[in-house]
Structure formats: structure tokens, C-alpha cells
Amino acid sequence: MILTQCPSCRTLFRVEGEALEACGGAVRCGECGAVFQADVYRLDEAAGKTGGRALRRRWPFAVAAGLLAMGLFVQALYAARQPLARIAMTRPVIHIVCRALACGLAHPAAPSRFRLLAPEVHLVGASHVLRIRARLENTANFRQTVPHLAVTLLDASGTRIARADFPARVFLRHPRAALGPGGQAGVGLTLRIPARAAGYKLMLFATGRR
Image 1 (cartoon, rainbow, N blue to C red):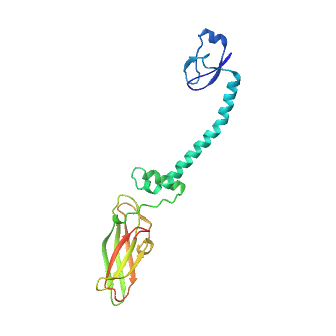
Image 2 (cartoon, rainbow, N blue to C red):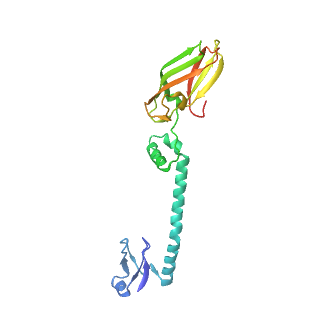
Image 3 (cartoon, one colour):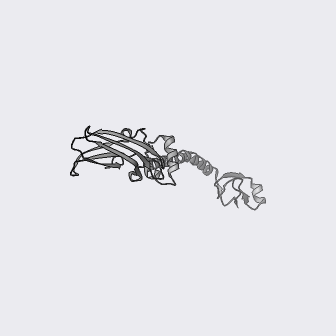
């Protein structure tokens, strides 16, 4: 009886000497079906045992390496989650993963894709009050974070005299963090202003940008 090893799948097995002589030294691997000359790939018993022990020692390291590679991939995916969320092909996968892992994915913000519909702004001079009413619409084809609203006050000559920035929770009638494609929300804001204010400007900008 000899110990041989399949050159294709590296399986070790023993072959009876009589059977080996009968088939001219050619054997078929029971694992992968490869046919090879058993005496060409013959191993001694010590080598076979050493190989088995080496394989048993290596598999924990292989598993650890696989887990490490997976961890690095997840870290890279987490770091790139914001840009990937802006790509139509990868956006659904990123949102599913971040919901499962609670990774704090923020919606993309493109303030230029928001617009104020039918704005009604009244500057009440006697009471020094500015009332703003409108509808905020997201014209983008993706869900995005509601921008901030900047109100700039001007004097009679058009010179800026004051500016105030308001987050969505202040200027939306029913506060929400984001709007889906084509989504709308009511805007309602009442401000006390300086007596010399004669005009105003409204501007939408993303959080952290001005």
C-alpha cells in the first residue's frame, strides 16, 4: 500500500499495491475525478502526516485573514457611504446596509434643487414684523436633506443690515429632516425686524455651507 496525492485537488489517499499494478499505476481521484500516476505523486507516511498537520495549522489563519479582509472592506464601505449614496446604482444597497448597521447615513443635500413655491412675504412696517409663507419643493430625483433658510434684511438703499439663518425645524410648519423626490413642505416664519429694514432676500443653503 502506498500513499499518494492527487495533483489536481491535493487529496491524500492510499492505494493497494496489487490494484496499482493491475491498472499500470494510473488511479482516479475519488474527490475530483482526475486520473494520474500514483507512483509519480507518491508520498511517504511522514510527509503525509506533516502535510496534514500543516493544513490543520493553516486553516485558522486563513479564516482570520478572510475576516480581516471583510472587516477592511466594511470599513472602506462605511467611509465612502456618502458618495456611494449619491450614485443611483449603489444607493439602494448603501441605504439597506446603513439601516441595518445604524451607520448614520445622511441624505445628500443639493439646495439648488429646492425651490420656494408661491412665496408670500409681508413686511409690516408699523409692527416691525416680517411674515414668510411658501411651499418648499424638492425637484431632485432623490431624497435629500432639507436645507437651511437664510433671511437677509436690507435698508432702503439695498445695503444689508442683518442676516439670520434658520434650520428646517424652525421654518417648516411640520418639521422634517428630509424630503423625497417631488416632496413638498409648508414654510411658515414670522420675524421681528429692525425699523429701518425696507427689503429682504431669501436663500436656501446646505447645512455647513453658506
